[in-house]
Length: 124
Image 1 (cartoon, rainbow, N blue to C red):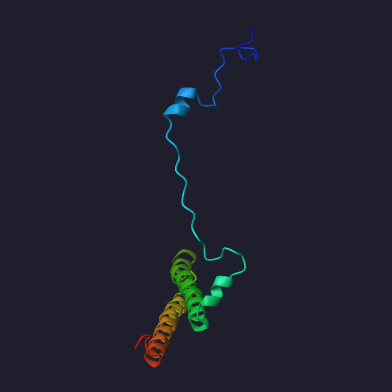
Image 2 (tube, helix red, strand yellow):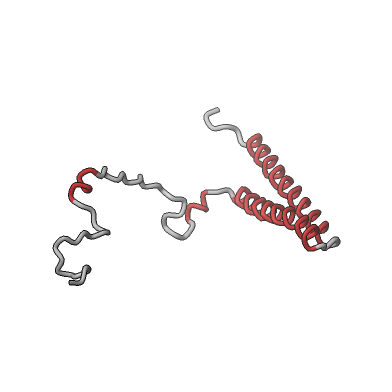
């Protein structure tokens, strides 16, 4: 007879667990629920942020990403492709983007300190 006959009662299913295996397997714990920043889907939590802080953060992220890309890409283009004019330009622009990232952060930090000095602490 055919060894893979459907009527074979000695058949062992590969995908299903046995009763003994189900009894010995520990319970899988559930991860705790986490409140996300955007639970309702329309970024209403972003209104809690100061506009200057949000603007500085977005600008710093864009500058930092550009700096990382160009500082990495410039030397590779220069060395591997032999583009001796474009490679150094990309590298310099990347370094300047990194400097601009630092300037954006320092300007935000100074403005935050000035606002803290101008506003008296609560409870005083």
